[in-house]
View 1 (cartoon, helix red, strand yellow):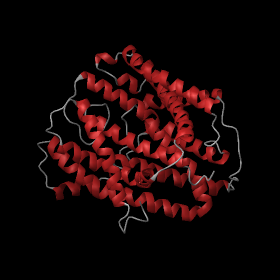
View 2 (spheres, rainbow, N blue to C red):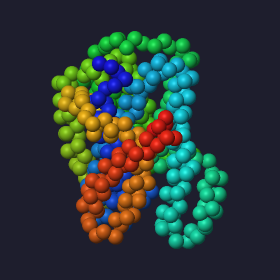
View 3 (cartoon, rainbow, N blue to C red):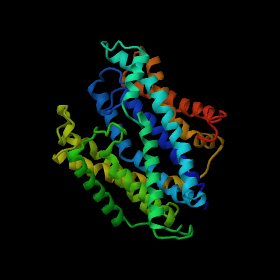
View 4 (tube, rainbow, N blue to C red):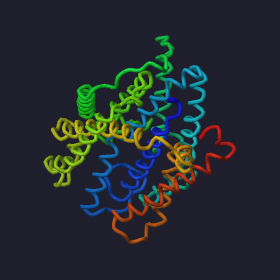
Length: 378
């Protein structure tokens, strides 16, 4: 199978983009998390369900993105050479990153600041002066694009320093066994817990907008993706392994409410789950990383076996996925503001907004990527 075109991986990307859009809409309508715009205070049931939704998706979605990116990095670097590879990364990742940070983000942030802070009466020009005086990059969801760019530079530097030769693409190795997978998840959970003692969930390195509490997973799964490419793991996972880890994922999802209740979540304070020397943080870190690995393995097997082909629609969505990710923040914020006065429960509003926003982001992405100046970037 051609490693440069794996339909099931393209379909996985589509799913992940949809989930990212839904997470940010979930935060908009009451789920726990940080986002540009939040609409009022939700009722307790809506908060619990939307936060439950976000915890599950956050556990694996961005990690799987990094794993997929790692998988395609060696082939791209080998095919183009390190310098052309970096040039292409700067073009495809750097230009959208700068455009978002210096144009789109201030256009989004200024009116929202005016709405949230009535005492903020500065003009847009004054706001831009303040905005550009402080160093920042990777604002909003573009932190992911920024991180991919950093990882690309680190990968090329490692290749140059070690003079590592390209590994033959026909090098097949057996996919790790269940014990190895479990030990990897355990180690990842423990490292995440240790990091979050000092850097709890919600902590961000502001100048670069990097969410270090999640980075143990992102770094490790990017590296796993590189290994998976060299050893042909993604096309060699046994279906029995996928079934086992799907069962593990289901059990873990069902146990999250129990963990939440046992950790005192019903009292309204969920901070101990986010970090520090708390048993809740240890339990949540282990739960999160085991769920991430379980879902990733299960999805890879499921999509390879059942969704390894594309029709006209999925091909168009796949081609537009990157653009949809870049533009989804302004799209869903404008959508949320446009239906702000519609009276619905937070859960119904989240559902309705998701049904509108997901196809809208892909449709607009498909149009934007065909523009003359965007064709070679998006």
